[in-house]
Amino acid sequence: MLTDQRNGGSGQRGTRHRGVSAWPWYTVASAKRPASVIVLMLVVVAAGMRTAWAGKGWIVTLAPSLTETVFALGAGDQVAGVGDYATFPPRVARLPRLGGLYNPNIERILELKPRLVLIPSPMPRLEAVCTRAGIRVDVIRMDGAGDLGPAILRLGRLLGRRSAARALLGSIRHRLRLVLKRTSRLPRIRVLLVIDRPRTGPLRDVTTVGYGSFIDTLVRTAGGCNIFSDVHQRYFTASLEEILRRRPQMIVEFDAGASHPKRLQREATRAWSELFGRRQMPRVRVVTCSCCVVPGPRAGLAAARLAAILHPRAVWPPEGHR
Image (cartoon, rainbow, N blue to C red; front, side, top):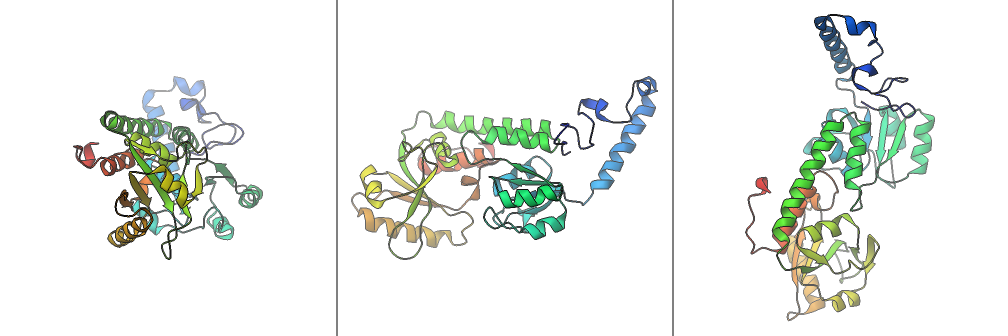
């Protein structure tokens, strides 16, 4: 349940979430009632809450990472709408699209009458409108290496799913540890990480990542070394001259959700071969899985997939066992 902003309660204003004592009807006198009566009352109240919220979405998420995490915590049925770029889990395809960080559809959001709007960074206009309408807005960052754990636990508190949040975070950490253990003795592969560039015309405007970004951390876990890890800027445009000077052994391009990966692979190989030439040509791989660019519950899967790309000759267990 959504906790009250002022009281930290369980969704009912003026109460505190301290086990059964959070419920208004639980008093000292009720503690003396027969156990069967208390059980019956709990069942009735719980059934009433399920009926009240059945099919009624009260959460809006405007970032793919937030959307995935809310669903992973088991609150997907309470999502009323999502951002334009949400693709996972597949169920989000049926939900209303409400814009993104730079173009939120404020009118449509207000029509849905949510109780909670989750955004990845400050959006002053949206926040002001929602505040006037009595809608809570929370900024939850997930794009940095150290953001994932605190964000999941915070969402668990907001949604009344603390146990699910702890379990999810434990599962992610376990999978990351497994990948790190398998790659710790493998050679570090120098990698250029490309998150955006024009697909037409000559090679130019290559957007890459620096130290502290989600992708940078994933690659280090997967047995790679980001050639721009010394740049303390999460996203920036790198010059072709500087890329040549740093001599990557591999180039990984991310194009989440692309429909023609083989064609993209051919185009990327051709574009980079014109820059490097045949003798110095690094390996090139286009990654289309969104898990590698969306911070969230699939971080362990993303690290495992990147490890298999960076170290194709290593023996990796089936994906379901990583």
